Amino acid sequence: MDLTLIVVLVIVLALFFDFTNGFHDTANAMATPIATGAMKPKVAVTVAAVLNLVGAFLSTEVAKTVSGGIIREGDGGVQISPEMIFAGLIGAVVWNMFTWLRGLPSSSSHALFGGLIGAAVVGAGLSSVDFSVVLSKVVLPALLAPLIAGLVGYTATRLAYRITRRRDDKSERGGFRYGQIFTSSLVALAHGTNDAQKTMGVITLTLIASGALGAGSGPPLWVVVVCALAIALGTYTGGWRIIQTMGGGLTEVKPTQGFSAEASTTATVLASSHLGFALSTTQVASGSIIGAGLGRRGAKIQWSTAGKIVAAWFITLPASAAVGAVAAFIASAGIVGLVVDAVVGVAVIAGIFLLSRRRPHDQSAAMEVDVAATSVLSRRRARRAEKRGRIDTPAGGVEAPFVRLDDPPVATTTADRGDRADRTDRTDRTDRTDDGTTR
Amino acid sequence: MSIDWSAFVTVALVSLFSAAALVTVYSLGLRLLTVDDRSAVRTVAGWACFVLCGLGVLYGIYLIVPALHR
Image 1 (cartoon, helix red, strand yellow):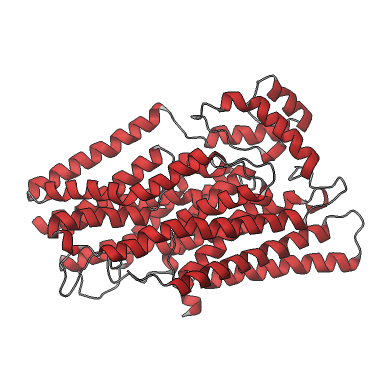
Image 2 (cartoon, chains in turn green, red):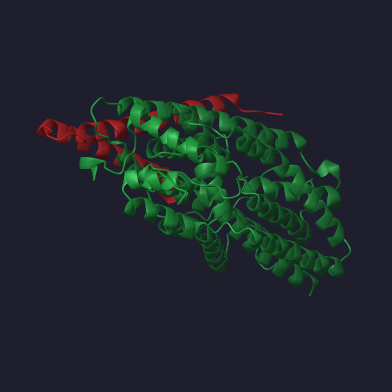
């Protein structure tokens, strides 16, 4: 009875983690195409969800260890109990929900590692954690990923602007939007193959530990199906807060930059997963976007937002570890502890959800209105309307940047943005809707 | 602590060159095709660029799907 309760709890929580993983990471693939109008928000999240679903079925090779070597598990080390996995998942889920509330893209896998570390330290002592692996697998990659991706994104953006620079009045850069659809779809597919697997691994290992499955067996079909559905549903729900941060909060993304950023994210993620130096997709995607922002003349980067994101990356591990440790401590009280954990966990998640409702960021509707408004209005009328402060949309047609509703500076940037749009007009006739023959 | 620096440098260089190549070819394609009266050569070359990009995307799918490369 004891064992079945914990197994059920782990499975439910793991699926919820899968769900948060999905909506946390929609932004990696879809923030820039949504920001540049390459895809409508709903279309983008649907495409991402379908690709995640497909991706989850493509690769069902389950990892041998839950923690990827961070915890000394297995022979001669500690035995990771279902209670530890449960506590670790609570840490990961709570941290994922919190970063989502703040609109911060942070790595879901790091949150899972952190939660497990906290649970293992409480359950089996400090020696159970291999801190050198933590350093080489989590901390250093977190420094290196944005550097590589930033460099790649910068180079790609400079190249793209350089090659498409011309003197006559025509603009071809709108054509980059079509390219974005492909590159961001690749990112979504790669995400599905990687991340759904983690949850499958957690559930399968729990089932093995409880004796429901033989040692060394792969995930049963129902595990694959529910994990695929959970991550796809999460992706479809769309973490709009994080999409806004990455699509407009870091820098104003134009199609040329969006294409370059997604191309560099795709290239870096694929290279890192096939050449043996694992990098977090979230960190790569953020780095690419910053690189693309640096690559366009006149683009501004919100370094304060970038700083917050980097800070969140470094807090992710200790924060989810702390939550995981507390949860593990409570869980050590036996079945009562588990129930307390579950109840408190649900309460915290519900609380964060309610908090998010107070300042809703479900911008899908607002963004669709944005795009609709700019496509209905002519460029000049849009600009005039903006000057009058009637709509909060810049004059740039579909290149409308995101407006972060929770950022106070928005009120002061209306004039500034108009002026920036003018400047863009003159210097590098970029990314207009009237992209002529590329249509 | 063991950081595989050679793997890191490989990843950095491969991502840099593959992203640069993809963006270059796609941009060239756009540049070649967006003129009012383009010659047949230009049209063919432009579409060839996009075909090349398409192959790049297919290679990406090949890398993502384990069943294809194992």
